Image (tube, rainbow, N blue to C red; front, side, top):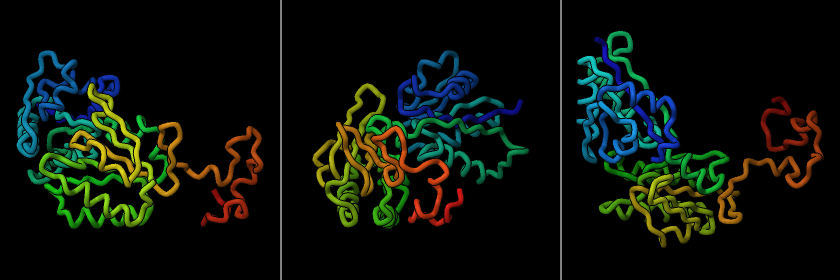
Length: 279
C-alpha cells in the first residue's frame, strides 16, 4: 500500500483556528509526528493514532522518520505551528525527499496543508499593521549566518517595509534583537509603532503596543512575534494601522467621493503611478 505524508500547519494554537482540512488530515492519519509542543495543538483530534513526539532541534530526525513510515505504507501527519511553509516543516520535508531521489510519480504522496502563519495571527490581534508591503525575517542564526540576517534587516528597513520578526530572542540568543533594533533605527524613527505579541491565541497570550525606540523595555522571547511598522503606520486607540494609500485618492470621512469611478484611474489623479491610467 502506498503511503502518504501530510505536512500540516496548525495555526497559532487555538483549535478554533485549525482549518477543516487540517482536522481531516490528522484524523485520516494513523501516525502523528511532531515537536511535543506542536502535538499539543492537535491533541483533541488524536484518538487511535500512534503519536511520535521529539524535542527541539530534532527536525531532521523527525522528517526522516516520517518519510520512512510513509514509505512503509502509513499515512503520516507531520505537524507544525503556524503555516508549515513559513519557517515550518514543509521545506525540510521536500529537501530530504529530494535528497532521496523522490518524485511525485514514483514516491509517496505529499500534501501540504496550509495554516495561519504567526504574522497573520499576530497582525489580527494588533489591528491592521500589515496592510501594505511587508516582509518576515527570522533573527535565529542557528542555521542562517548573522551577516546574512544583518543584510536583510538593512535592506528591508531602507525600503520602508513593514517587518515581522520571528524568533527574536531565546535564553542563549540575547544580542540579536538588540543588534536588529540598532539597524532598524538607522532607517526608521524611534516613534515607529511596534507590536509585540507572545503566544497569540494561546492561554498565556500577551500583547504590547509600543515603539521601535522602546521595544526592548518589554518581555521578548521565542514565543514572541514582533511587527514593526513603516513610515506611514500609526496607532489609534491601541491598535496599529498601516494605511494602504486610500487617503491619497479618497475622502475617508465622506460617503460621496470627490472622484467618480471613471476618474479614479486617470493619470492626473494618480501622478505617482507608472501605468498611465490603465488598470
